[in-house]
Amino acid sequence: MRLPDRLAAGALIACAVLVTGCLGAQQTTAVDPAGAGGLKPDREDKDVGLVGLAPGFDLKGYSILAIDRCAVNDPEVKDDEDRKLAAAMPEYYQAELVRRARETGLFTRVVHLGEASAPAPAPGLLRLECVITRLAPGSRALRYLVGFGAGRSKAQTEVRFVDVQSGRVVMLVADRRAAAYGVFGGDSEEHLKESFGDMARDLGKFLVRLHRGEAPKKD
Image 1 (cartoon, rainbow, N blue to C red):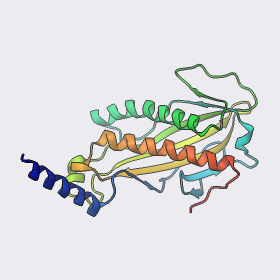
Image 2 (cartoon, rainbow, N blue to C red):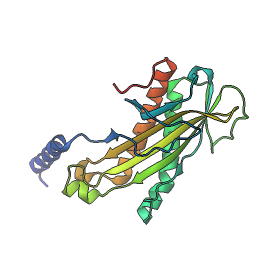
Image 3 (cartoon, one colour):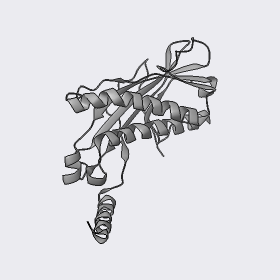
């Protein structure tokens, strides 16, 4: 292809992205979060979707965060591609959670469980557990040929923070992302990685806000 033709093709792709929407995953409302430990994520937040807080929970009382690998609990995981992603995404998400938690600077230690053993129960130890309840690659062909949200990749997580010494669930977060746009429909695995990466990044932002004393808020 000649250089002018390449430039024209690139311009057409850029225009298509601008017309159909932004690249990347968009936050949507979590569907039927289960809750845990008597808590339900029922307060909207601009960064993480839905939040549930135990009475009296104060993040400043915790200096160590241990982050566990996510389980996948999605009945729609059926074919080989689904199973491949269900095996890969929990490890990727855990690594992103660890990285983003360390970047906040809120904890003296962030433990990647699986790479390191779990710390002994003690005051100030918080454990992050999570379940991936939606893991849908979507259809690249539909995203490219149809657009308008068709064939979207979808991911939903429910994250719970547990006071290790007492075993009490002190906070829940339910976050959902959907990605529909990308050059030639975008790769499904990359869409999901972006969704999980964004969820980890925004959870870090929320923890910083919570540590400052901000309550969950939509805007």
